Length: 171
Image (cartoon, rainbow, N blue to C red; front, top):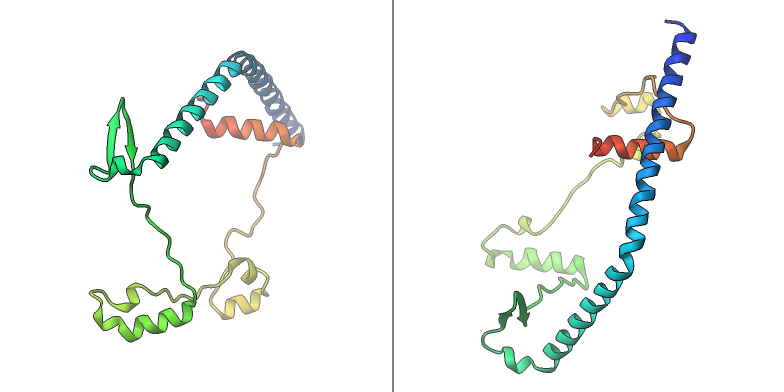
């Protein structure tokens, strides 16, 4: 294979990419036109949904007494009422909480180690900076550090469009 053959194949790829990008840009223009036409109606409907949601929410906040039992009710496919929120675990002094867990852990059904995480791991981005001789000494190796052929379009926007289309599989 010669450089002339590679140049010809690169030209074929560039032409195919250009045609694909032109088709995608045309499609985008058509979609944008449809969206522009529909957006005023969609925006009005979104505003109406927000207003209706806000009115219902305000009424629910004003009348919790209506939802003591049952706590929820369904009207017209909309479930309304009150429910317990999950809550958030807040640990003021984690070190002290871990100590107390181990002190009182005998009261628990599960082992105290079920509730505590202890781990050590290498930070790969930092380890990659170490000299090869030292990496070998600690049993770490760098994989796939050889030259491989690549193809990259120099027009990055075109590359992104094509990558997106290829990822979608032409859907």
